[in-house]
Length: 465
Image (cartoon, rainbow, N blue to C red; front, side, top):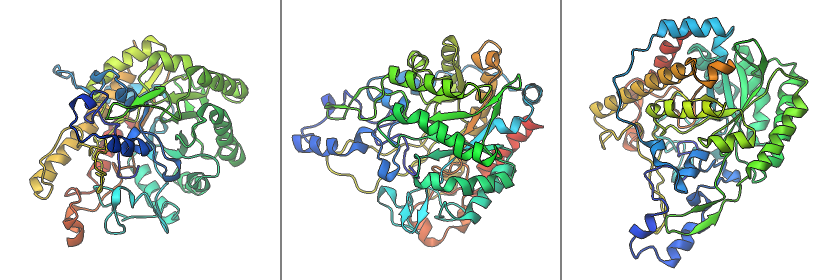
C-alpha cells in the first residue's frame, strides 16, 4: 500500500501473533474480537477494491507461527571485503546486457481525481499524504505522462534496465496504464516486467490466463519492443513473472486467538497444475519462462512448480540471506533478494478499540523518536545508505557463489525495492524545501532528497562498468 505496510496490518513480526491472546487484557472482549475479525486487513487479507496487498507469503507464515529466525539478524562475523571490480567483471562476462538484470519495483496506482493511495491511513491529501516522505513531484497521478517521463529518466539515469509493474488484473486501472508506461519506458531504453498481485481469491485459475494475456497484449502485439525477456548466462531468454502472496497457510489466527480461514489460500497441487499447464502452453515460444514466488517455504515452492523465490519483505535482514540461499539451492530453486534502504511505513491515524493493529517500526532499526532534529534525520539517512550497500553486496555476492543454484542455472536478477511504493528510491523534496505546513505534519524527508537514488546509481556504476 502506498505509504502503508504492503505486508498488511499484522504482517510485521513485532505485532501480536497467535500467543497474544494469553498476554492480552480483559479489554479483548467478544465485541473487540468481532471488530477485529470484521476487517480483513486486520487479518492480513488483501482488499482488491483498495488495491491493498495484504500479508506477503513470508508474513502470512510468520503470523501462523512460522520460524521467527526469519527476522532475526545473526551475530555478524567480520564481513569479507566485497570486491566491486571483480564482481562487476564476473557479471559483465556472463551477461550481455547486465543492466536489464537490475529491475525497479514500480507502482502505477496513484491517482488525484479521485485520490487513490495518497488518502490511505486516514490522510487528507494533497498536503497530508499516506507517506512519511513528500515526493519531489508531490502527490502525483500515475496516469500523467510527464510524471512517468520523470520517473523513467531517474530510473534509467541510475543504471537500472527495467521496471516490474505492480499489476492488478485484466482491465484494472494498472492494466489500462501499461501501454502508456511501456511507451515512455521504451523511449528511455527500459524494459517492463510484471508483478502479479492478489486481486482475486482464485489465484491458480487466473495465473495461467493472466500470464498469457500479458505476453499477448504487451509482448506479441507490441512486437516485443519493451517486454523484459531476461537472458541467462548461456544466452537463453524468456519472460520472468513475480507473484505476491503466493504460498499461504490455509488458516490464520488473529491477535485474540481466533482462527480464520484464509480466503485466497491456494493448495500447492492447484498451483502445480497451473504452472505445468502454463509451461506446456509456452514451451515452443521461449527458451525458458521464469516463475518466482514470494516465499521462504522451499518444499512448497518446489511442489507448486515455481522456479524460485523473490521475496519482497524488507524486514528480512541481509544477514539471513545466505542461509536462505543455501536452502533454496538444496531444492534446486533460484533466488533473488532485493536491494532496499529498509522500511519506513506510515502509521494509521485512527484505530478502533480492540484492534489488532500495531504501527510499523523503522527498519533496519529504530531511529531517534523525534524526526525534527537534523541529527536524527541524518542518522536515519546513514542507516538507509548502509542498508542499500549491504543489501546490494549481499545479493550480488550470493548470486555469484558457484556452489549455489543461481550460478548453476545461469540466473542473475536483482529487484530494487522499490521505486515508488513507500517512495523508497524515488527522489523526495529536500528537507529545507518542505513548507511550514509539511514540517508540522512531521514528514521524514532527509536533507538531500535524492540521496538514495544517487547512492544506488554510484554502486551500480561500479558493477555495470
